[in-house]
Image (cartoon, rainbow, N blue to C red; front, side, top):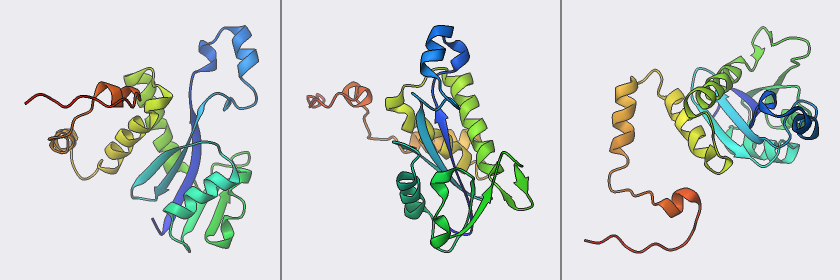
Length: 187
């Protein structure tokens, strides 16, 4: 990706309000990212989004993902999270401090914040419960839907998805992460 690119992270996991008060006190610290899955999003403004599950939100991890996905010399917009410091060596790095404002002229991450709201509403409203093992699949589906939002309608997206599964087989063992070798299909 190049041009104007927004980078942000979010966390997916259980809601603290659904926990018993004793469990909530033991598990939730600070902003509530503990025991949740970290996701990094990279959005080309007025373009496509890429998301990926990341092991943590440290400088090393986030910087590596940004370098892997964004062309050097691009304008990168992030929030004030300390892990994004140092991006100005390769990029034109613009930072918005959400403690002060959510947008100052062209400096914001509102496009990606909008995408996170769509993703989280889909998980809460449609899927209700998402296992961490399968989270990347839900991310891929949401990114596909978002990236094709202007090109084709729902029927077109469905037809495209179905046309790409011809002669592909997803087995129960692969779906559940059990890597045992499966017997071949009978003829």
